[in-house]
Image 1 (cartoon, rainbow, N blue to C red):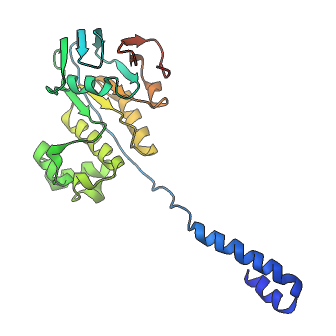
Image 2: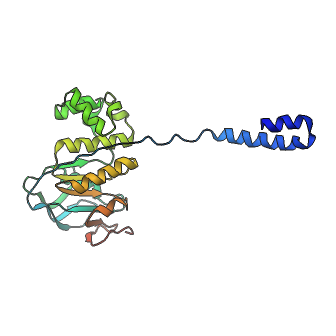
Image 3: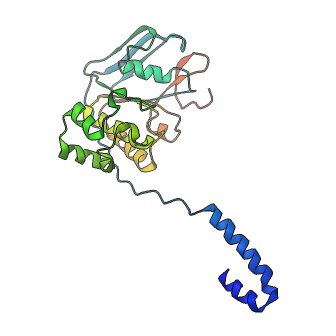
Length: 254
């Protein structure tokens, strides 16, 4: 534009090109700068788990009141079960029930097997017990981690800069990573993951997927992520007609 401005001073023929270039520059400036490139992440997830009894979950004629018809299922040690279905069909209620939430209305029978310790990843990141607390305070209260080891484990999840930040002020992705960190520290032998990749950046999602392949335990995950389901071998479908059934392959049309 500056070149054309100088040329327009001595050549009337260049004046129209100069005005056109002014318009192009103005539109370019109105769009604003491009978004910053994503930060390089080096997230290291370490989920250890542990050996449990062969039967991890047994459900007999289980009904989630107002959500499902009776269904029965057995889940065994080492299974990777993707829980599929539309929103509002009872998937999250099922995981909450298995995680010990006594507020889930149900009938029928269910039980966990020997040495099964469930760890629940909440889709909504709803943790009222964390309200008003920083990550360091939570790690101290929940796992008695002092400053140095707490910062070390936060660093593996790229959360060291948020150590003194309150949980409620974290981004959705940071809250998700912190929940996975807590699952690691709990040493849960049954992971109940409700939309775990929903808020994770690509590096964190890949780190979680890699950790799950090495995990010594059983995994149930509610997900709509077709790529994520590639790491699962069983598929439990919550249908829109209240039917709950197992499918040999992922089902995306309910």
